[in-house]
Length: 253
Image 1: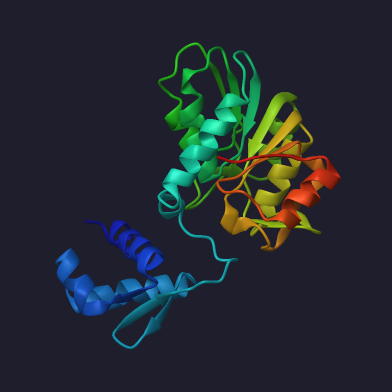
Image 2: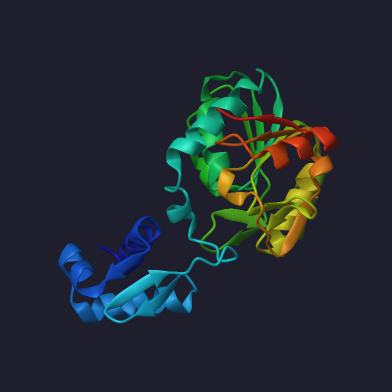
C-alpha cells in the first residue's frame, strides 16, 4: 500500500470516528508505529488532523479542504439522492456546465441515462467518468491542474467557460451563508464558479445540509444568482423562507 493511500484511509477513519490510535492503525495496516506517526505528522502539517497522546483527532475547521478521494467517499447516500433529483431536472439534448466538485461527479453518473447531452467541465474526474458515454459531446475547459483536486483552474479555465452559454449550470460549494451567499475555501474555485454562473441560463446549486450556515474565504455568488437549490435534507424554516424571498426553488428527497 502506498503511503498516500494509507494516509487517505487514516483520514477517512478520522472523519468517521473523530480520533485514531497509533497502535491500532499499526496493526490495521501492517506497518510500524513509527510509520503511522510519520503519517499523522504529515496529516497535521496539512491541517487535516491534530496529534494527541497516542494518536490524533480530526481537525474540525470547516475551512480545511480534504483530499478529493476522501471527500468523494463522504455522504455517498446523500450525494446519490441529490444527483437523482438533479437528473430529473435535466432534459435530453441540453448543454450543461458541471463544476469540479465531488457532488458533480455523482450528478454526472446519474445523468448517464440521458441522450445527446453536451457537458462542459473543469473536472478531470467527470471527464474520466463520462469517457465511455456515447452520443454526448464532452468538453474540457483545460487550464492549470490543481494538485489533489482533479480540477482545472485559473484564467485559461475561466476564459473557456465564458466562451460558452449553457442551458444549465450544475455546481456545489464549500459553504452557504444567508448574507454572503455561495462560498469557496479558495479564490480560484470561487472565480471559476463565478464564470459558470455568468455562462448559463438555469443555475442549480447542489449542496448538502452540512454546508448551510457556514462561511468560507471566497464569495462565488449570491443566493439571488441561483434558480434551484438541491439538498439532501429539508432545510430549516429560516432557510425555506429566505429561498422564497429571493425566488429560489428548493428541492430535497
